[in-house]
Image (tube, rainbow, N blue to C red; front, side, top):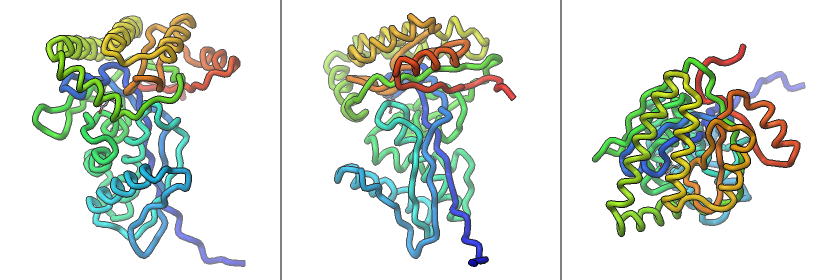
Length: 312
Ligand code: MEV
């Protein structure tokens, strides 16, 4: 019998996220509200002779290249500790639920731990940001910031700076959403790029809508802090209409938004980059019966509490 105990692998968790209000306009400097999901990515680090990543077989050649480059940036930021990092996840991937931000945060946490450095959210966010730039090009930073803080936040990209500012929003009541998968979608980079072209051509019209969405995010933050879920739901519905006006919705997303509204959602909207598919969220006082009903009819969904008091 082997009595020698193997060292426990180090682990780091990165939460997925949903954007409650303000996706896309956040890229242009307007505020957004985003909250962490209970689902996410777990990174594990085992001792190795050099710092390396385990690349899953299922990835395409291009995905392997990007992941390797992103890992290289995090490794450099942490001083390349001697570990081999692997990942597993219970988050639906490429659905607008922040899987790359979650992976970046999980990886940052485990590499910082392995290097014996601080794992305070600001440090984790700094390392994760290196990876996010490799995944997305010019992200607003809302995804990895939400994941690193694990709180419902109002976030704003600081003009002229690569980092944004986040303020944690406390709610006196539970803020619970049902997340429904609407179907596969194009990469965030493609959807963000296509919108950038439209807004460059018709800047005034598009900026008007971004500004309005920014105002909705501020109104949503007030509603959260007052515990006024009816008001928050209404803001979400209006935000969804403006995202559709920006060309970011699709028949599959609309179908799920209306399904959730028909089931009594206080508000429902697409979340994340949207475009030709992705995920939608519905705000409910009580999510459990909704998830039960949806799952019974074969709809891919789960629930998450984003803020407020939690049941013991
Ligand atoms: C993606 O989760 C959110 C977008 O606003 C892009 C970004 O903020 O970088 C669409």
